[in-house]
Length: 416
Image (cartoon, rainbow, N blue to C red; front, side, top):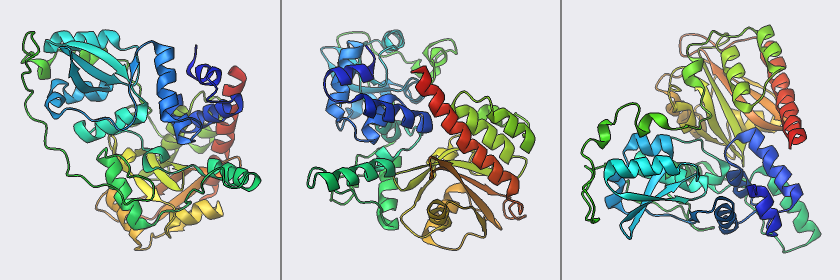
């Protein structure tokens, strides 16, 4: 039984809500559970138990802590690529937290390499991502869920329900100021959990650098000394890695012309394909391009090309939409911005995330989905040239992108 069906059968979810979460997943990616939690359609405990019933494995949820002595047992590359996090040692077995249950063979292989029997435990995706950020410095796509923010659509629906049934649902804060956002942002990057509602963000000392792997008294052989130098055909190379990132391929692909991009958008089959088309087209217009998702009054980096956006650089970018900025203006007006970014706290921090060079001018374009801004496209030419002055083609392109996204949502619905 699929996860959504299990939640419906248990009375925790309606079919209408499931459709909403699946549509959200098409827009913003991630596993279904992440989208259900982000939209607050189910509780984390309900989700975890449904995962356990669906997969037939042990599950965990809530704020998960790792025994510091176990961190070094799983090398950083393995933890990042396989999305494994060592949880606890119990009855001479190392419990490995994972986002999926279909990695049993990989977990067994890791156990043989380190000389400790392993047991896979499935936890919600965002909890695993918190642990990977905190203990292994991994970079993962940030979500409104990480900031404790409720996406605007869901907030609007709750507000309407509040009016119909006063007192049934608490009002959600729509905006957060820049100072609070910076604290939340620091917590997300460090994988620290959110504070209780209404309290100040919790700050903890950053984790100590990873030390050499400890030798634990497990009753079995000591961990292998060569775990960090595994051959390419071992566990490091066998993973079926799930990633939205397409930058490694994009760097080597030629730019797309405006007409080529319009033609390509007619046959997209997924959100990653749309991102690739957007960025390849942007390469013909600017030296730096960043595609961002808009969720819960925050704009979050998704994919990018150019200075400061190499590797996973784009996914470390976050901009609050509750403080004055060009990004806020674009989202509110649903029209583009072209000009020099003023020296506001939001702009200064945004440009610092991209690099030391301040561009002469920038262009920010909205991408609409069902009348609201769902994504933003940022372009600049660095500090030696101005951003493209003619926004005409890019405006047509962003409108066509919105149409392609909606067609993709409808296609997925028909398939379901």
